[in-house]
Length: 279
Length: 336
Image 1 (tube, rainbow over the protein chains, first blue to last red):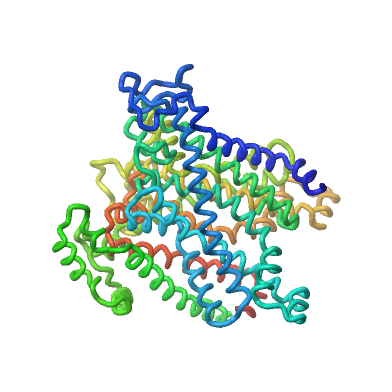
Image 2 (image 1 turned 135 degrees about the vertical axis):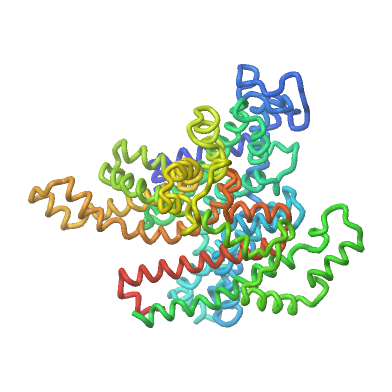
């Protein structure tokens, strides 16, 4: 497989893949590998705010809970949110992009106008507002993120569909009398899917970041969940003494996001060699 | 040229109306019962009903929307239920702080990003290039709020070099307001103590905010330099022995920064969004901080006004970018 060999030579992309696989494994088996899996809710006040040591590699938090375990246990939530948000956003955005791209007329115009408005607002601000208005919890944060992320997919699929619509194979399909639904879903969609996959991969990393901001500002996960953003926010009262309390969840976010970004960049090079890595 | 400018500006009007309608629908209609959210958890049904009536939530949606558009066109954004002051006034007082922060961040990103990009491009696939690529890719992956806390931890709490939060030291007599930028105003008033104080307060938030933009500018400049280095004129100048230093930092640079410069427009929008988080961490008295406060206290009118404001800034910056682009490339005049 030429394509696999090409991917294997792309060292940054391989590092990204390794990080992503590692993160998924940690997310799945987290409760079994965390040294103190009960530390989601447990409190051990005698060992609160202990610096990193052999027993607690990442130190302990204000309730004496093992930070190493909580960072591990937080992985699942972060990945779940990212996956759910990107899946819902793609499920809304891709069909809308196909419709707007393949048809012309008021519906197409309306879809793209709304998309442009969404894209002219920072996703973070919209998501923050929505998450707060829908009473803050992890589920509403997810919903708010998905409702503000779909336009990225719509714009992408719209452009691809417009390009493909005038291509020869679509003309041929129309000529033999293929129905619109068949042309769009069986023929245009498979041809437009690679940039969507690239976008979704990078979107996973991006969503981890934005979801962490929501958690940090208090409109996402609620205590005692081991959410990375929420933990950093809780740690602020104990700085500068408990530096480890803020540092390790942030590093976890950094590594996870880096993994998805590197993988996404690599996939993009693979899918479309004309696009340079630097873009 | 004039036609290009006019047409580009007119094309923004429907976008601005769309912006108004969408933000309105999202913020007022999406939550099942906005009045209940406003009233808080312990409100009686009567209180909720009062609020519903007072805000006009009991009227038809279309009527509410028309009323809202009418108010916005008259620059009437209502009153903040938190500060009990007109939202327009609050915004006007806070906007200069945000602009100062944003421009400082943009300046840092440009002043450092372009040279770093050139260095990376010139040393393509050698260690400075690898180091800078690693730096720029982590710059995009790092969570700004965490990075801010790390900077505070190191430079304010441990080393005690820079202030932890705010825009000026408490007890500092501020210079008379002329431009709204504390740095410029204190220079105008000849108050170097106030200037130094403002600068010290600006460093950490501006550096935090600039991080992502710095990474982006570095990446784009690097790509531009790599492309320009392949051009025939570079080969020629190198062949005739033109001084390498001058060749790179004048001729290659001039031909490489165009892509990076067009990014600046987009970056400005991203910086305004980033300011929301950065300001709330550093307690910077600007629009971003105001936005977070409004959202956390469900202060409707402020929420509507600031989302609209940010959307308008985005749209205006986009127009400006297109215009600058048009100035650089007259072929674009015919399009649109």
